[in-house]
Image 1 (tube, helix red, strand yellow):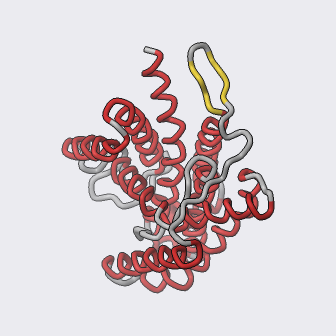
Image 2 (cartoon, rainbow, N blue to C red):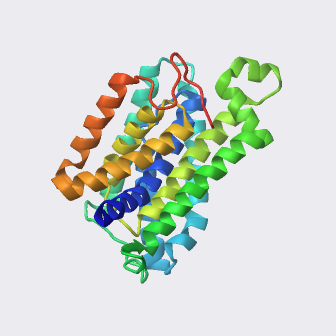
Image 3 (cartoon, helix red, strand yellow):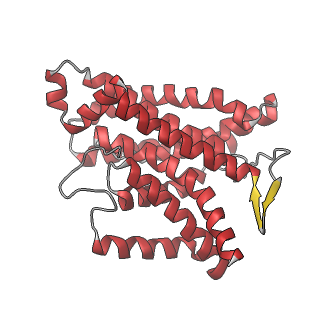
Length: 294
């Protein structure tokens, strides 16, 4: 029984970061109705920034987050203003091509600037752990999990109880009505996209000490985020969080019993099985494409 609990804990710790990546993606979709295929490349950028700040400036990754997250926020504002905003009234296929092209551009830019080598952030506390009975808990993984869940809860509280959060939810529900009551929808779109990029930037900082980074790291991890977003229900923050945690646990168990190369196969089988019975995901609503912060 101890090994099952240990595997579940390990999966939850990783799943918390998956959830944070997915929440940023589903937030953008829920409000702007845009699927951002470049989301993974912003994750890669955050990991590279963390790596260079650690090795060149000696900044601990958690300290570097105070710089990396604002940088990703500003980049989100710029991306929304220069690229995304111009496609909002266009057919969805145009939005797909624009964000996919941005993804390919950033991948190749990283490849030119940083080569395809893997780079790692090895902090002094990376291997430290403590015991709770028969279980060994990694300080780094637990801290990353707590930070991820805390940021997700903070986002939900912001959306539910702040004036700006109410404006974001109103825009997600009906952009025309939001304009009629005086909400600056363009500003809300820019803020929402920037928050989504900042969240994935925070996830990149938390992942940097745990996983090596190369130009294709984000492309690999974004697949998990897309699965979590669809499985949780398109536009649902609670659903994306739950699905991210579930995928982490499934990966942990499947890697242990079947081998690491089988983990994607297993969670895709689970993904298809769940959608066969509930096509809208955990918290999705039939015919709805609006954000849900419950």
